[in-house]
Every structure is written in structure tokens, then in C-alpha cells.
Amino acid sequence: MAKIGIVLATYNGEKYLAQMLDSLVAQTRQADFIVAVDDGSKDNTPAILKSFQDRLPLQITRLEKNSGHRAAFSKALELAQPQLDDNDLIALADQDDVWLPQKLEFLEKAMEAEQGEKPTLVFGDAQVVDADGKIIDESWRSISNIPTELSAEARIAGTNNVTGCLSLFRASLLQYVLPIPPAVGVHDAWIGLLAAQHGKVIALKEPVILYRLHDENSVGLGTPFSFDETCRRQTAWTDMLLEKSSLLNLSFAQQKFLKKLNRYWHSRSKAPILLTSTVFLIRSRKHLFPHSERRFKKILFSLLGSPAVHLLFGKDK
Image (cartoon, rainbow, N blue to C red):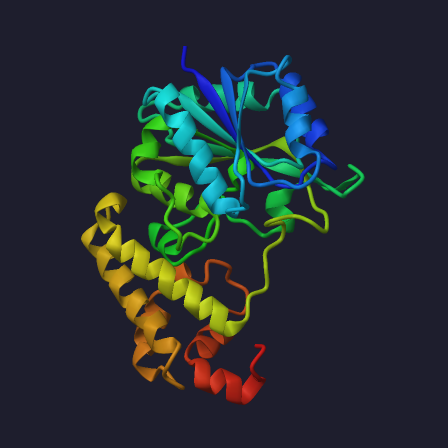
């Protein structure tokens, strides 16, 4: 039987952490071990973690300084890796959600239920709750407009449909995932891309957690970056993908798309108008804009570079 390891990153999470850990205690399929990396918390989070060590197979590592969400999860996965064989399984956990009791059991069965090629990663849906635990929506995927399937090019362009805390994936993926590069904005986008490139990703409609939205969420419904910050992040992301292309198992067409996308983002941060990108944007529209709403307007806006955007919309666009 495959082992399941849970990796958890915490930071000043005392408000909801005990509820989350209680939900791990209540799992019908218990994890074989849990790696918790505390990212320099200043509150009671480390003490709460320690108080659960008699009820959970909890391995706690404390970082002296806050390193950020991506780095903390990278560290937790690095600590978990030596304890796992390739066919063992990894679940990612956030400090403020509540897992439904059958989460691990359900996802583990889904990993083995497929005929033929087994999935590399499966992920479920979530019921969305507010800060007090009241259900405000029955589907995280619906409220966030998350597609169940994505093309490889859409993932390369930065669209992600894999929410880490809803997922279970094979430990064999860690050879490609680690260390998580600094240019990765959210770790689950990197994991989702690599899982799709090295196997099969399956979306399940059933909810597996209560996903909590509150004022202190690290990710939640997303951070509205400025135009310049978006350009910077997308340029860094595509630069990194080109540098790490040997890990990505890209087809010739995907390599060609990535190179064109990288040139586009480098140009967009400097040129006022990107007329030479018109054909690329139109031909790649389904990958660049997976949501069909206002796709034509998005193409037109995407022809504007940083100087034109600032001139027309101001510096905070």
C-alpha cells in the first residue's frame, strides 16, 4: 500500500490552525506522516502544532525568518521527499481550511481507479466557507471560474486550475518540482504544469475540503497586481520556463509557443504597441484567454505595451 505524506506550511495561523489539524485527526485514511514547516510565526502557531504531536505523525520544522509561501512549501516538500518512494502520494495542506473526513481516502482511490495510465495528480472541488465557517458557495471551482481541463499552452502561459490543498499527487513528480524556482508565483501552478507534462491530471467534481476565505488568505481569490508587476512576473515566469525547459517534457509546438510567449512579454514591458504580436495573440487566443468571455477585447488590450497602458489608463493600471 502506498504511503501518503502531507506537507503543511504555516505562518501566524493560530486563529484556524487547530480546526485544520482536528480535521486531519478525523481522516478516515490517516496520513503516514505530516511535515509541517512553520515560516517564522510570531504568534502561537508553533505551540499549536506541538500540541497535536500526540495525535498526528507530525514532524515540525521552524524557520527563524519568514521566507514566503513558495519557499516554505518547497522546504516542506524537500523534507518529505526522502521518506517517499516514487509511487507514494503527497497531499498539500493550508493552515486555515477544514478537510472533509473522506478526503485522503477518496483521492487515493481516485488515483488508482483509472484504467490504463494512472493519474499523476488528481484534485477535487471545495465548499467555500467564510471566516466563521459558514458555507457561502458549494463550489470553489465555480466561484473562481476554474476550468476542469487546460491545454499545455494555457498552463505555460500561467493559467492554473490545480488548487494545491485539493490535490493528491505522486512522489515521483518531486524530481522535477524541487526546488521550486523563485519565479514561481504560486507553488500549485508549478506542480500542476509538471504533473500535466509528465502524466495525467484529473479533475474530480466532489468537494474534499471546506475552503476558507478571509482577510488574511495568502492566495484566496487572487491578488490584483499592477500592469507593470504583471509584466515583470510573466517575464520572469517565461524566462524560468525556458531555463528549465529540460524538466518540462515539451513538444516541438509547445517549445515554439513558449519562445514566442517569452518574446511577447519582454516586448510588452517596453514597446507601446505590439502590432507584430497580433497573429500570435489571435492564433493562441484559446490558450492565452481560456475563458471565452470578452476574448476579443482581451486581445486588443494585449496589443498595448507598458508605455501605452500608462498613457491611457494611468500608472496604477
